[in-house]
Length: 118
Image (spheres, rainbow, N blue to C red):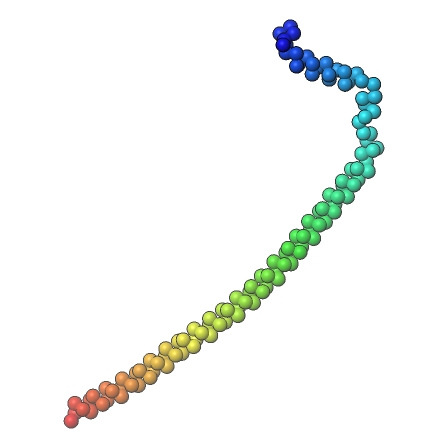
């Protein structure tokens, strides 16, 4: 429905707004600045506690990560030392086997030369 080219819902909402503004005691329902002070103080206290908790959490997380890094480093160092030891043993065994093989081949060569000389 339109009244003078405007919808009735628009006119109704303007009427409701004007009635609310003109209502006696409307301003008394809004909280005063003094009443907000304890609420704001409490909110500020919550914010400070949250910041403190955040700092403590960050410190705890840092400490845990440092401890984890130290343990990983120790385990890594132990694993690296094990790899170095195994590598040294492997190459020592390879060199010993080459030395044995070389000695065996020299002996066989000497035997073959002795057979050919006869």
